[in-house]
Amino acid sequence: MNLGKSIGKFFITALFAVSTLPISVQAQDLLARQAPIDRKMKAVDTLVLKSIVEREQEQSPAASLYHDWDNRYAHHRIEMPDTFKIDLRHFCMPTNSRVVTSNFGSRWGRQHKGLDIKVYIGDTIRAAFSGKVRIVRYEPGGYGKYIVIRHPNGLETIYGHLSEQLVTENEVVRAGEIIGLGGNTGRSTGSHLHFETRLCGVALNPALMFDFRNQDVTGDFFVYNSSTYDEQSAEATRLRGKVGNGGYTRDLVQDGELGSYANKHSADKGELLYHKVKAGETLSSIARQRGVTVEKICSLNHLNTNSHVRPGMILRYS
Image 1 (tube, rainbow, N blue to C red):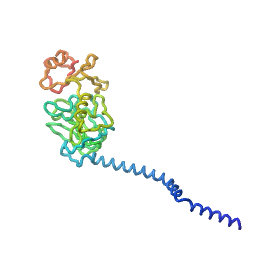
Image 2 (tube, rainbow, N blue to C red):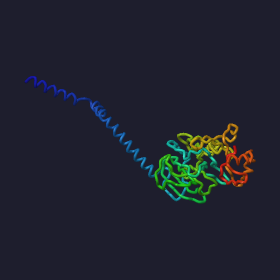
Image 3 (cartoon, one colour):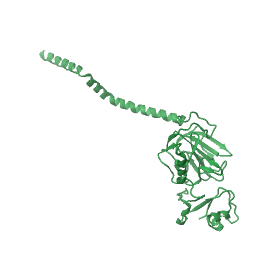
Image 4 (tube, rainbow, N blue to C red):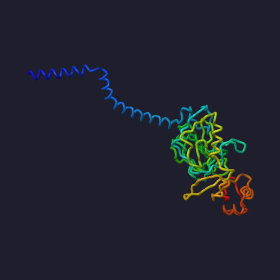
């Protein structure tokens, strides 16, 4: 009987002791037990938030810059920030071609708002970044068959002179997805891809972000700054624009894709040299300009001396 009373007193004393622990100690114990639950909930909340953001970006890419979704205009200028950081990660080069045939900027008395990249009819054209297709249209006096895609990084990319458009308006595409085929439609003197990068409807020099000769972007990010843009653009053209005065080198790799390109003055290294024919040029004038004979050009291109050349043709001369 005394043993039972003793045990009862022990439990009562222990319960009293626990109940009299400092509140801070009890609170810390509660927090310790709650921490794993909080971490799990935070992880769940992060995944849910990420999913919501991704869905919103798919529905309205770069909504912080563009306040509407309009399929009427290829480009419509809106308020431009003084500075803006553009994420270039998770990109895909729109074409495997490494040849820039025309630079961004003044050309033939007007502004050329993109880069012309040498492609052939039927060559694969891919989306440069993930985004949403805003326009798929045909403009006979300009872009020809073209596509406009808006991307979450703030850019809109334009792909002109296509032979085929393989996406539809309002379609969500991923970086690297095939969107069209190279062509020569619209105002074009030869098959090529006209590639534009626009921010808030304003054309930016693609060479600031894309290095076609090296098949890469210029960095993880590009920061647009209105006060330094002109100098940046000129330097980008010098580094990554068209090589030489219409002449460029082309090494063909085994699968027929275009390989490395270098300065036209490297002919003494055994590299292949090419000339893009301009309006009014003949075999004779090209031969004089390049310092070779008409017979050599004909031999290299399987032509005869009476052949007529058309603007946009690519002729090997060395």
